[in-house]
Length: 341
Image (cartoon, rainbow, N blue to C red; front, side, top):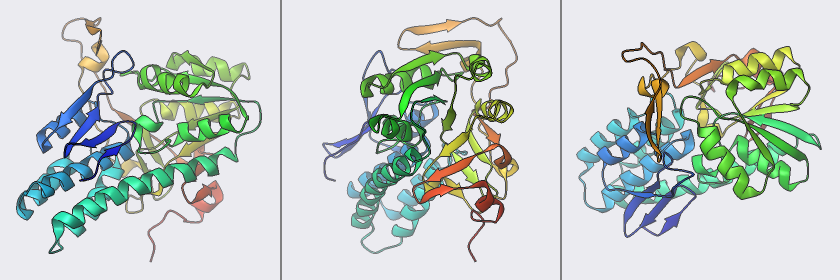
């Protein structure tokens, strides 16, 4: 396969390498990913994260394994193993469905490579289109708030919600950004803060519980988040804590926008109650681990509830910004996300 490089993925020496997002921002470590087991481990430990990036990494690995001579039957098994690695993020399923279709072709090895590279190129274009569409909603002088990480680290391109913010900054419309640290793994504090710093965008890092007080003071003009799955009725699954922000935004009359590619839309999922929510390890709440080491603060044996995502009802969302344009609540109510006949 040709050499390829994005913020978080590389193909070199015919091998997939992923940027360890658990080590950022203190260390920049590229991890070799020679087989399915290693990629599944990267996904489960969030070395690889972000709905678009997870789907792309799986597609690229399948293509590389095919080039290396893995038989069709083993590739099909590998595909299903990868599909099960992150149940909430629908981009993974959508990408793998396309790869599965290509796997039926006679020249499947070549076809898988072409499809994987096509998916990467498409994602870059999707991100640019999202940024263009979303930036039209940003009012000059805006103080924006974002949750989790939705930038180039999570995609092949400029990102989704963070791509919109970056585009708005380039257009001179963003005054500053409030960055939720995003419990329990601090993707906002570690990754979004780092990306905004690299882009030169002014930001302040806040604890998740500070967002309400900022809105009450009139210091938040809009909230921008990404999505791991959008149901047919417009409900959105995203990083835990997103729903809380949406409720606060409605109370304080702050616009709440979701930015995502159309590959995040699941027309066959009727509503948020049908979205599978991944439960994660208790250790992510009882303490913290990173490039600095491990720290535990909870009592030994503490019982923990740790869902990775929550669901925001469509009724709390001001607009869905896709690569195809801005979708309004009225359009969602009229069934724009419903399965096509």
